[in-house]
Amino acid sequence: MDPILYSLPLLLSVTLVFTYAVLRTFTQLWIIHRRKVAIFQKYEQDPKSFDSSQGVIEQILEQERLNQAVVRQDYAITGTCLSALGLSGVFLGRFLGYGEFAVGLYIGGIACIVLGVAIALLGYLIRALTRPIHTPQT
Image (tube, rainbow, N blue to C red; front, side, top):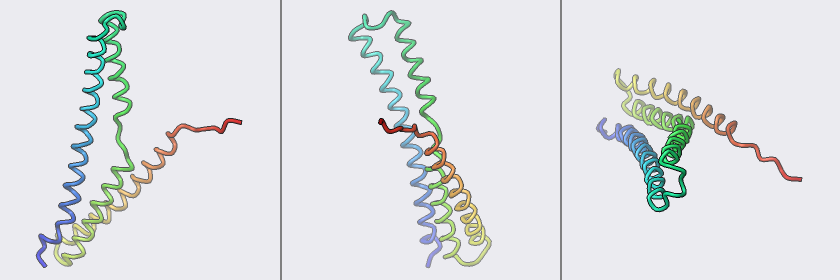
């Protein structure tokens, strides 16, 4: 078979990862923009609800602090995507079978899988440790 056909899973996974990253970034920016617009619309409809224009500025600055706290790297998703890229690299290297390019893809794919699984496990551990503890009410 043609090596181009073997590279389709790798190209597809790279395209999906970049598309996800771009859509996630644009969605976060859109949400931040909508929050600011909502604050300005609230001020425009009822200026008395704020002490002064300083109140509007304080609310926008508070939103910025919240946005900085919310926007952080999700290691579980990063590790999973890295493992998927490594898996497609391993398959492509295995199907090509010979040559420096095939060996490089295969070894690089294995390294990506190992690193991706480690990062994903770290991400799931961080997610579990940062979850708030719910105590039963007795």
